[in-house]
Image 1 (cartoon, helix red, strand yellow):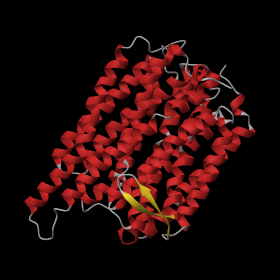
Image 2 (cartoon, rainbow, N blue to C red; image 1 turned 90 degrees about the horizontal axis):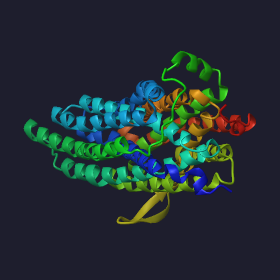
Image 3 (cartoon, rainbow, N blue to C red; image 1 turned 180 degrees about the horizontal axis):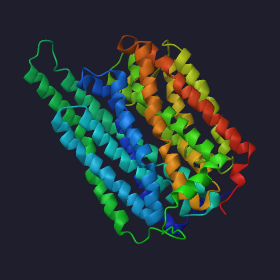
Image 4 (cartoon, one colour; image 1 turned 180 degrees about the vertical axis):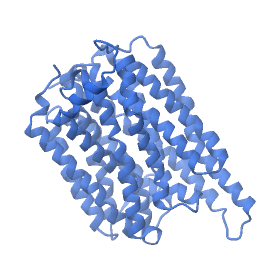
Length: 451
């Protein structure tokens, strides 16, 4: 049985903490953003569900666009400079929320989300393989899962911020709207709404400046050097495309991220539609899901000491399929009333229980697919990481697809039923992930090491 010191040697403890903080910070942004798809429907009355999903299109589309540049930076200048470049762009994106709020339009926010997420793309392209490379390869998947365990911690903080600093405040402002208000009064309300959305992102950017300085000035960050500083993009891409495990991992990652972002983006839609409650109240259920996601990632990391990652990945994908079927077909009958801290007695339908449980099964998927897909890549690991990050494009395309399905199935007039049917999208995603897990087991990918 491997000990923690085998996974994280003492020599890399401080760099590991700094990078794990990066994992937490991109979890904060990701999950602070997801519920805003619903919130922007109230701020801009002329937008449809699919149009507000363009937030995720801009966010995760940026991952696709900046993945290869992030890998080239890693190849030419090393992971540390890549992390700093990603953090810098992340900071710029957060600061852009201020001018976006002054323009009183939806599109400037899309630009800010794109820039911020572009920074996250470069950051993740470098931080994930950096974690893998800074220690022994035989514990790389466990080490990455451990680092990724801090991601849902940031996610949970992001949800708290979104609930109390954004959604709750927006509901107070939204209540000021009445029929027959003049244009100036409506403009004043919209200005206040956009200021509420802007503030947390701007503050997060200021905090990230401190993290950037700590990483830039730390002499303990290990250098992972190449034989040369040339990108070798064409040659490396050719080798990667010839690696069946890597190609399948990219496909699986595309569908995983699509499932995760779609599930979390439309959680508020589903719960408000089924239970007839406010956005901020529905956030309580979403927060339960993220708490369970956080705990489960730690649990799965521990289980990897005894069980192969591919075995756990297959089990989680099968349970994800079952839970998705529950969301689609379970209906809105209340099965029990639970207690939510600071809220009190709250109803739970079987569909809501299944929806929350999906987060448990998703918790190990991203780092496990990333770790398994990186097996045996050798010098191609840096560019290979960019492909696994670019696969996050699934979060943009599949979330948009699910939004269109909601509009087609009924939109606002039947939000609960329409959203339930749309969960066929993550169901298909989990089937693909299960197929990848079986491929890994059949081809004994976990026994491979880099040459």
